[in-house]
Length: 66
Image (cartoon, rainbow, N blue to C red; front, side):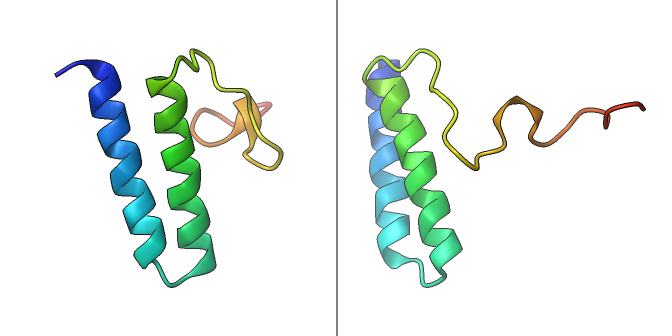
């Protein structure tokens, strides 16, 4: 299986999960993940950060000054 086929399949799964989710934040999360998979599938080498996604400083790593 090629990478783009895998990413497309994962995007479809995330879209199905978004349609079944009941909590608005879960719906949003599934759509965001689906978007990232589609970017990978259709040539989005480096997806641009979207407003509110935390950018480069989101999650993990040591806090500033640590």
